[in-house]
Image (cartoon, rainbow, N blue to C red):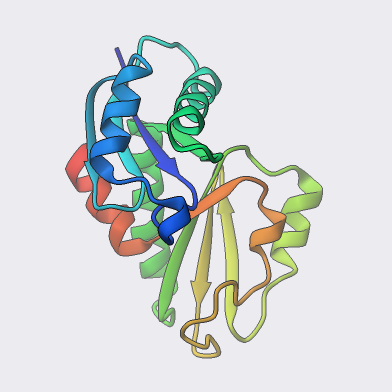
Length: 178
Protein backbone atom coordinates (compact mmCIF):
# COMPACT_ATOMS: atom_id res chain seq x y z
CA UNK A 1 0.00 0.00 0.00
CA UNK A 2 1.53 3.37 -1.00
CA UNK A 3 2.15 6.17 1.46
CA UNK A 4 0.19 9.37 0.90
CA UNK A 5 0.46 12.84 2.35
CA UNK A 6 -2.76 14.79 2.81
CA UNK A 7 -2.95 18.52 3.40
CA UNK A 8 -6.10 20.02 4.87
CA UNK A 9 -7.10 23.54 3.93
CA UNK A 10 -8.30 26.15 6.42
CA UNK A 11 -8.32 24.16 9.63
CA UNK A 12 -7.40 25.45 13.10
CA UNK A 13 -7.76 29.07 12.01
CA UNK A 14 -10.17 29.96 14.77
CA UNK A 15 -12.78 28.51 17.06
CA UNK A 16 -15.25 27.73 14.27
CA UNK A 17 -12.80 25.63 12.19
CA UNK A 18 -11.06 23.72 14.96
CA UNK A 19 -9.80 20.27 14.00
CA UNK A 20 -7.14 19.06 16.46
CA UNK A 21 -4.57 16.64 15.11
CA UNK A 22 -5.77 13.78 17.35
CA UNK A 23 -9.24 14.16 15.83
CA UNK A 24 -7.79 14.28 12.32
CA UNK A 25 -6.00 10.97 12.99
CA UNK A 26 -9.15 9.38 14.44
CA UNK A 27 -11.36 10.43 11.52
CA UNK A 28 -8.78 9.35 8.90
CA UNK A 29 -8.61 5.94 10.57
CA UNK A 30 -12.41 5.70 10.62
CA UNK A 31 -12.31 6.43 6.87
CA UNK A 32 -10.20 3.30 6.37
CA UNK A 33 -6.70 4.79 6.46
CA UNK A 34 -3.88 3.14 8.38
CA UNK A 35 -0.50 4.20 9.71
CA UNK A 36 -1.90 7.72 10.21
CA UNK A 37 0.44 10.41 11.57
CA UNK A 38 0.18 14.19 11.78
CA UNK A 39 2.78 16.95 11.71
CA UNK A 40 2.07 20.10 13.74
CA UNK A 41 -1.51 21.21 14.18
CA UNK A 42 -2.13 22.68 10.72
CA UNK A 43 -3.58 19.78 8.77
CA UNK A 44 -0.56 17.78 7.59
CA UNK A 45 -1.27 14.04 7.52
CA UNK A 46 0.69 10.93 6.51
CA UNK A 47 -1.37 7.83 5.81
CA UNK A 48 -1.80 4.62 3.91
CA UNK A 49 -5.04 3.83 2.12
CA UNK A 50 -6.44 0.80 0.32
CA UNK A 51 -8.01 3.19 -2.20
CA UNK A 52 -6.08 3.27 -5.45
CA UNK A 53 -6.46 6.84 -6.65
CA UNK A 54 -5.69 10.23 -5.23
CA UNK A 55 -9.18 11.48 -6.15
CA UNK A 56 -10.85 8.63 -4.25
CA UNK A 57 -8.70 9.26 -1.18
CA UNK A 58 -9.47 12.99 -1.27
CA UNK A 59 -13.18 12.29 -1.62
CA UNK A 60 -13.23 9.74 1.22
CA UNK A 61 -11.30 12.03 3.57
CA UNK A 62 -13.31 15.15 2.70
CA UNK A 63 -16.56 13.26 3.32
CA UNK A 64 -15.36 11.88 6.65
CA UNK A 65 -13.95 15.21 7.78
CA UNK A 66 -17.16 17.10 6.89
CA UNK A 67 -19.30 14.50 8.66
CA UNK A 68 -17.19 14.78 11.80
CA UNK A 69 -16.67 18.55 11.85
CA UNK A 70 -19.84 19.91 10.29
CA UNK A 71 -17.89 22.03 7.79
CA UNK A 72 -16.12 21.34 4.50
CA UNK A 73 -12.41 20.49 4.74
CA UNK A 74 -10.82 20.65 1.28
CA UNK A 75 -8.02 18.08 1.19
CA UNK A 76 -5.10 17.84 -1.22
CA UNK A 77 -3.34 14.46 -1.46
CA UNK A 78 0.07 13.54 -2.87
CA UNK A 79 1.97 10.28 -3.04
CA UNK A 80 5.08 10.55 -0.88
CA UNK A 81 7.33 10.48 -3.98
CA UNK A 82 5.40 13.42 -5.51
CA UNK A 83 5.83 15.41 -2.33
CA UNK A 84 9.54 14.61 -2.19
CA UNK A 85 9.83 16.19 -5.65
CA UNK A 86 8.12 19.35 -4.35
CA UNK A 87 10.66 19.56 -1.52
CA UNK A 88 13.50 19.17 -4.04
CA UNK A 89 11.94 22.02 -6.05
CA UNK A 90 11.93 24.18 -2.90
CA UNK A 91 15.66 23.65 -2.51
CA UNK A 92 16.37 24.16 -6.21
CA UNK A 93 14.37 27.41 -6.30
CA UNK A 94 16.14 28.69 -3.18
CA UNK A 95 19.49 28.25 -4.91
CA UNK A 96 18.24 29.76 -8.20
CA UNK A 97 16.64 32.74 -6.41
CA UNK A 98 18.93 33.78 -3.53
CA UNK A 99 17.11 37.13 -3.33
CA UNK A 100 13.86 35.67 -2.01
CA UNK A 101 12.92 36.64 1.54
CA UNK A 102 9.89 34.33 1.85
CA UNK A 103 8.93 31.16 0.01
CA UNK A 104 5.43 29.75 0.26
CA UNK A 105 4.21 26.68 -1.58
CA UNK A 106 0.58 26.35 -2.64
CA UNK A 107 -0.29 22.66 -2.86
CA UNK A 108 -2.85 22.30 -5.66
CA UNK A 109 -5.66 19.78 -5.93
CA UNK A 110 -5.38 19.89 -9.74
CA UNK A 111 -2.76 20.97 -12.24
CA UNK A 112 -3.46 24.33 -13.85
CA UNK A 113 -4.45 24.63 -17.49
CA UNK A 114 -2.55 26.88 -19.92
CA UNK A 115 -4.85 29.86 -19.35
CA UNK A 116 -4.49 29.67 -15.56
CA UNK A 117 -0.72 29.24 -15.87
CA UNK A 118 -0.50 32.41 -17.97
CA UNK A 119 -2.65 34.33 -15.47
CA UNK A 120 -0.48 33.16 -12.57
CA UNK A 121 2.73 34.14 -14.41
CA UNK A 122 1.24 37.61 -15.03
CA UNK A 123 1.09 38.27 -11.27
CA UNK A 124 4.86 38.89 -11.17
CA UNK A 125 5.63 42.21 -9.47
CA UNK A 126 8.22 43.87 -7.26
CA UNK A 127 6.77 41.73 -4.43
CA UNK A 128 7.86 38.54 -6.19
CA UNK A 129 6.72 35.90 -8.61
CA UNK A 130 4.97 32.55 -8.82
CA UNK A 131 6.67 29.47 -10.26
CA UNK A 132 4.33 26.57 -10.98
CA UNK A 133 5.61 23.01 -11.19
CA UNK A 134 3.01 20.26 -11.59
CA UNK A 135 0.61 20.60 -8.61
CA UNK A 136 2.73 23.07 -6.64
CA UNK A 137 2.82 26.83 -7.06
CA UNK A 138 5.83 28.48 -5.42
CA UNK A 139 5.39 32.06 -4.25
CA UNK A 140 8.91 33.50 -4.33
CA UNK A 141 8.66 36.75 -2.45
CA UNK A 142 11.38 39.38 -2.72
CA UNK A 143 12.32 42.72 -1.25
CA UNK A 144 9.02 44.33 -2.30
CA UNK A 145 7.06 41.85 -0.16
CA UNK A 146 5.29 43.40 2.81
CA UNK A 147 5.34 40.95 5.74
CA UNK A 148 1.86 39.98 6.82
CA UNK A 149 0.34 40.34 3.36
CA UNK A 150 -2.00 37.37 2.90
CA UNK A 151 -1.73 37.10 -0.89
CA UNK A 152 0.92 39.64 -1.95
CA UNK A 153 0.86 38.56 -5.60
CA UNK A 154 -2.95 38.29 -5.87
CA UNK A 155 -2.45 34.84 -7.31
CA UNK A 156 -4.18 32.53 -4.80
CA UNK A 157 -7.59 33.01 -6.41
CA UNK A 158 -6.15 31.72 -9.70
CA UNK A 159 -4.97 28.40 -8.28
CA UNK A 160 -8.24 26.56 -7.70
CA UNK A 161 -8.46 24.44 -4.58
CA UNK A 162 -5.12 24.81 -2.81
CA UNK A 163 -3.54 25.11 0.61
CA UNK A 164 -0.23 26.73 1.41
CA UNK A 165 2.74 25.88 3.58
CA UNK A 166 6.03 27.71 3.97
CA UNK A 167 9.29 26.27 2.67
CA UNK A 168 10.43 25.30 6.18
CA UNK A 169 7.34 23.14 6.73
CA UNK A 170 7.66 21.56 3.27
CA UNK A 171 11.27 20.57 4.01
CA UNK A 172 10.42 19.27 7.49
CA UNK A 173 7.55 17.10 6.23
CA UNK A 174 9.65 15.69 3.39
CA UNK A 175 12.51 14.87 5.79
CA UNK A 176 10.10 13.20 8.19
CA UNK A 177 7.86 11.26 5.77
CA UNK A 178 9.48 10.92 2.33
